[in-house]
Image (cartoon, rainbow, N blue to C red; front, top):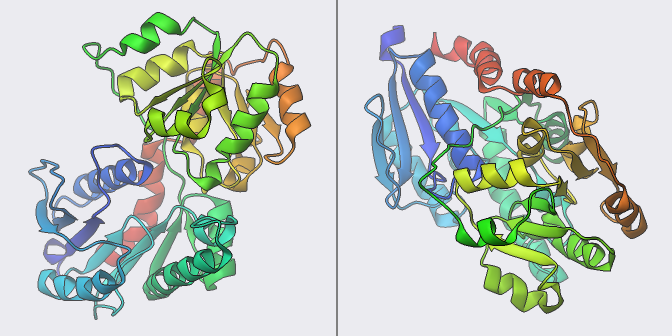
Length: 362
């Protein structure tokens, strides 16, 4: 088959306007394939609710969900219709039946659903059933894959332990937060003083260890606030943590420009996760020359060679409290952040991915 005839399909069903980690990653995949293989016919599957204008690719809208079991079967028939030579999913779900003569490439960001206690539910039986449900989709998808990509060495090890499959480690790049000076957050501007708050960015799911963070921060005698941002409703947070009002500011979702301002002006960034498959917010904070108080959960330990990080055990109350009480935390220097940007760049990501994908496309 000639090079020009190759058909590449990118599964973008998790593309979102919320700019989640997987959504950003999928956009980088689209950029990689369109810029590296311009002679290929590139198609993106995406949900009916999301639009991503791009004249270099064709789009196929679908209502099929990646982790709905019936759709895990039905996606096969959509693949048969598209007939790709290479099918790259930006998450660990492809199709129950494998399409013949098609190279399956799967990116795995983490295996936390299987590793974090009570990930789905505090009820042991419900959690067990949910884990088994995900195992059915995840294990079969990874076993189908001709190429498995992991975003960290930790995730690659977890994939090996859980599925027996080897994975290539291709680390993500640091995202460039878009500046939009026309967007303002009145509450933040009027209540947050420069260097008078710690920042957390992320969701509130169980692996993020938010109860630990809130409990211990409220016990500390400090003149600084704790600001929480992410895809959550602040009202829900304060309903659960009524005692947090006054000391903890839950902003919920913020756009890129707002998050950039929060990074620049905070005293330090806190990331208390029980487990992470990579830990991109840590790199984002360091890039803005902000010291990071970081847990040792999962792949976060892989950043131990980077300056400006202060580690703590995510289950050690006293150790975390003592770390918060420290004064004069040292941030990374400007030169160190430049090195960081080179180590974790999308350019390096593209270079490594090209070496892996080339044999299947050329």
